[in-house]
Length: 389
Ligand SMILES: [Ca+2]
Image 1 (tube, protein in one colour):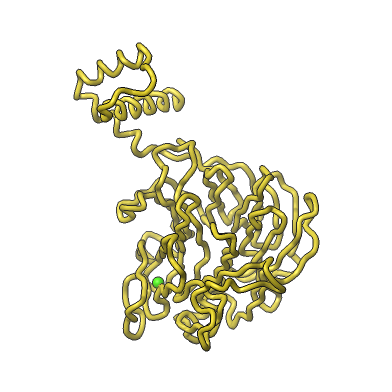
Image 2: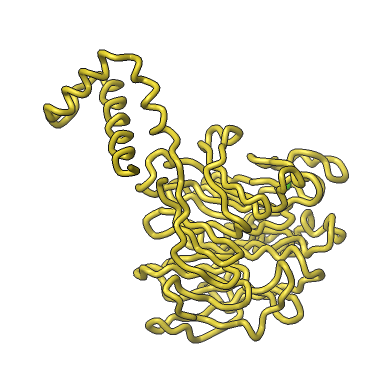
């Protein structure tokens, strides 16, 4: 059934494209296609049938089951998917344990192993995790064959409270490692870390983990050389940027920042940015005031949706789909909510019109494969491949 529907949808899409194109097709159309095109052109009543090709259904196919999976990565030259389990292990989609921190991580709701990224060369892997004291480590392992060896801490950060640890790691298109750190926790950012450029808390950092020991701060980071500011900071005014992702085609950065009392939000940074964006917390929550007066330079989110409505609790962002297997999804930004479980997708030009495309209970993260196809992780265990329905 699905195969037939897909063939019909693709054929209709092709016909619509051909009909919209005034120039002749570069290759000679087959007699069959010519005949069908003629039928279609003669029957305007069939036009609505082209609509299903614009938005189809998605299927979430479970391909592995893990213990509290929260983060996802792929490694150059390696077909396996790597998943971080919050309980402390980095495992492959075929079940192998690559790194085991289960004896070292802390066990709070927002603690544990929280992030994973591979160096673009595939030679090193980086994990973000909280230790028994609750403090954050970004730790590097070298890969020797398939074995992770040569462990060293790249960056550590004291955490004043157990919650809001951020955790996402990703290498940007510039080859630098981006690190998400929450505001340090409690509620309302009592220390004012989000707006304080003198702390790494409440920020996204940008470092070169291989350019120095323990790392190098890139010379073109926005606050390098500014008195009282940490050179590692790339963007600030964030509360708990649990997940962020780069658009593999454009280099744009999409940040899901978990809200306090009223709004969940997705922040956006265009690829041409020189960094230094202030996303508002704890002066702003979503597009509204949280405390104090709005600063001139604060950047409002591109998506804000109400917390505590329909079971919403924590935004999970998100990728622009750049795969090939789901044509109608191409170029759409996908995000979801951890508690409500809905997943929405919408054109990057019309994010307000994003519509629900699926549901994953306790959605903890999305992942992107080498081929641009997307995956979804549930804290309950499953790793889903997102496919055409
Ligand atoms: Ca904000």
